[in-house]
Image (cartoon, rainbow, N blue to C red; front, side, top):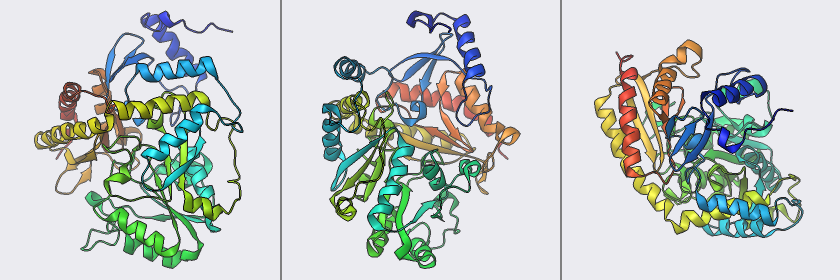
Length: 455
């Protein structure tokens, strides 16, 4: 058995980096990549920055996978994990334990409306999986409506809910999922007539319920703001109209806030922007700032009442793991005590104005949209036609214009995420204004590559 790298070896230079990358290529299967994929070996992080094993520094404009909300190495979170490990590192999910009980209470305090009780999972996919299960059990119905431009996770049910092409290898999937179109005003699937049946929400959903039979539909599952599939906030009134239709037909509204919950958009939860309370809310990622895996399904008394005393019919070995819950307690307390949610709202002003200024200089930017520390930059070949810089589900050579831009940014010390023709600008909520401006300047530099494809 080979020895594990000591802490002082992770920054020991190119030899260590080579070993980490070599072992990863030989023994690790990475998500969404073929075996043997090339990887950068990262060693440590601090605040809005992380370093690779060669000592290169990167500004984390993606919060890793839009989850490191409080930045890297926050001392309060690290201390909470260490202290809990000393006290109780593991516990059966059938026992109550202090951090899990405290976390459930804190979640009830910050979630909207009457949402009160939490079932804890290992992450967002499992949270969405259990949300479907709860909705079907509570309503006695089986069908679930979800949108095309969505990603809900990689487990069987969550992947079936997912609308983007990553679901294709997992099909036929779980029965009973029905699709609806997205309120994507920049590329409205209905051509955006006035009033638009898709982008206003209610007419499109009512039509689907007519075809499917409203009495057979358990839930509508939506990302409050579409995440990796383009950072698409809903138009004004959209969520309210969906809520009203669900209420009219006894359908549960499930909002997936795995990516946008816990301050990401400048509110505790994105649905707070529109004063909409779901029947079921799912969260993960920012709940622990990504330090320890954890997710949650949060419901109110009406859903519990509809269960009629029946168990939810599921269990997880690590449900409410004490280390994860202790980290989540520290995360929520830090978000409140350090006014991080309000800070994210201010960051949104800096990023919004900065990205708008970039759009004035770069014709390849077709649209800029977002809230708080959650922004999408849509790249096009022509603003008039809105022809995307790379096509839907671009792969291989077709994806190269955006992939080369992301690689160029990385060489300059800027890490960010992309999905097809959209760049995601999602830094830690604790990023400083100066760091935002530094990241925007680096992005300004590499956008010349996109402009070269314009015409």
